[in-house]
Length: 82
Image 1 (cartoon, rainbow, N blue to C red):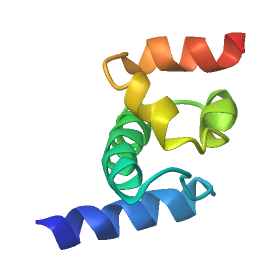
Image 2 (image 1 turned 45 degrees about the vertical axis):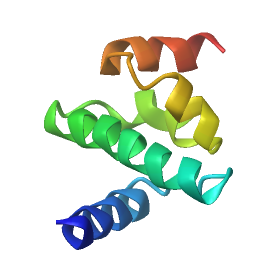
Image 3 (image 1 turned 135 degrees about the vertical axis):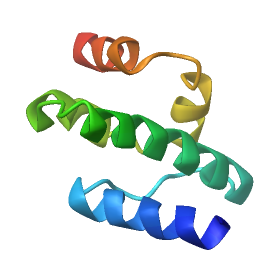
Image 4 (image 1 turned 135 degrees about the horizontal axis):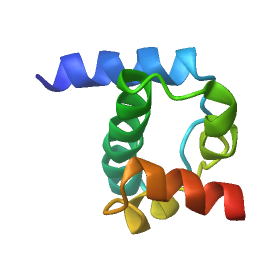
């Protein structure tokens, strides 16, 4: 299962041209799963990719961890306000 999720994460990161995360190894592993969940949901909802541009630039693992409880709409709103 972990290999599947790793491959899915790599595919989504490549498709959305998402930069590598910065942080400790543990933070990166955790944040990567959080980030992929959001992008996978955005894909499922056919979210406009232009709306996701600010979200794609978030490379801090701690940022993703700190915002893990937000909904997709909330996290998009948060990135467009900043």
